[in-house]
Each structure stands twice: as C-alpha cells, then as structure tokens.
Length: 270
Ligand code: ZN
Image (cartoon, rainbow, N blue to C red; front, side):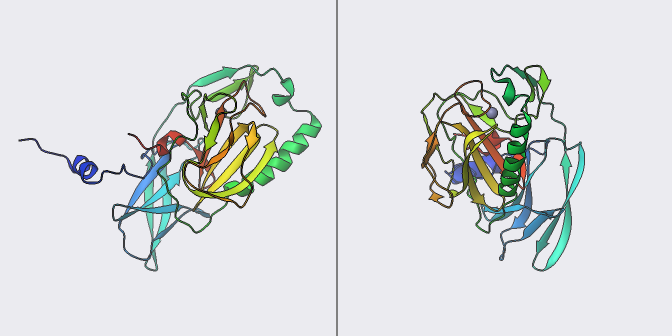
C-alpha cells in the first residue's frame, strides 16, 4: 500500500499551488512562521519597530519575515499579538553564501558617480526608502508569476564587483528578456511610484499590501502611473537598459518589511 505524506495529500486535495513563499530562513530569504489556526481577527506581528506581513493559507495564519542579507546566523525574535496578548517567537537564521560576480560597465560614472550624481542618488534614496517602508492594510496575494519571459540570468544576492570596485550585493533577480518585451505585474497591487533613477533607470514600484513591495527596473517604457491599481498579469512597461545596466534585461526586486529578499522564493512552482 502506498502511503501519502500529509504535505503530498494536501497538494493533491488543493489543486492550487500553495500561495506562500518557500520557507528559507537565511540572509536574503524569507522565514515563513506558522501562527496556528486562522481565528479572527488576524494576528499582527512585528520585528523591532517594523510591522510584518501576516497571510492566511489553508485555514492557518503565517507571518512572513524578510531577513536582511547582512544578518549573522543565530536567533531573531518577533512579537506576535493575537486576541490582545503578545508573545515572542524566535526564528533560527542559518547560513547562506552567495557567489561573487564581476561586471564591466562602459559608463564609469555609473560606478564612480560625480558630486552632482551623488546628490541625485541621495535624493532618490530618500524616495525609494520611503516606498520600501510602506505598510498598507490590504493582505497581499503572494502567488507571484515571473514578470517577464526569459531565462533567469543574475540571481539574487550575488556579491558584486563593478569595474573592479566592490559595490552593493545584487538585491533582485534578473530576467534576460529582450528590449521592448512586456513587463507584467506578478500579482495584484497598487503602483506606489514610477520614476527615472540614476542606478535603476526607469522604474515601477508596486505596493501589494502589508509591507510586500516589488520593483521593476531598467525599463525602456513606463505604462502605468502612481496610484493606479494593477491586476496580476497587467503590463507595467517594457524591458530596457536604462540606468546602470550591462544590456537589456529586467531587474525584479521583492521587498518584505523594508528588506530585499530573493524573488524566486515567491514563484509558484508548476
Ligand atoms: Zn539586477
């Protein structure tokens, strides 16, 4: 007789793939913490002063904790408030080593910006940091689809050296789609911002709710405006090579609790 594991049986009973991201409690990953049966109202959770995403799935509540890339292995503590009482849950963070990537950029100013560029970069950072800190009430859909068609090229977390100079790690996933290819919303949300940024080029940010924000960079064309709601699959713009890019591709970033995390953890597996 063939015995089915609980997880396999659940997979067969629910033809829809699980909507939660993959549990990956490592730097740059997402810890998926089971908070128990989905009693009402939904619990809330915080990590320090940062509110966390809580989603329901198959009759249970889960908190999604985005873990910063520079986190050292060890225990993180989150506070969970349910029915008026707050308890502490610890999350064990493991080790993940990301490979190094060396890139050559023709425009040296994109690697060593001049004083005017640095002032612009500082202004843009204020805008993008505010978007990353957004926390709107709506519970997000987390069953993402890849926003462009093409092979996954540079993966999340690569330790980057541009023209021989160490720079920030790769905080997104690159999709090698051709110039002009459509970029589509991976899930429903509201356009939080669009703009032309020094490093990121033409960019769209989408707020999916509860601290889950995604961004689409280096676009050749923007088809949406700030404040506009978007459906899953709606076209946001077209792939390009604006900003600091070695060639046309989509840079896709997924931000949870103000922390860039690996977008691949959110892709529904067939
Ligand atoms: Zn990229």
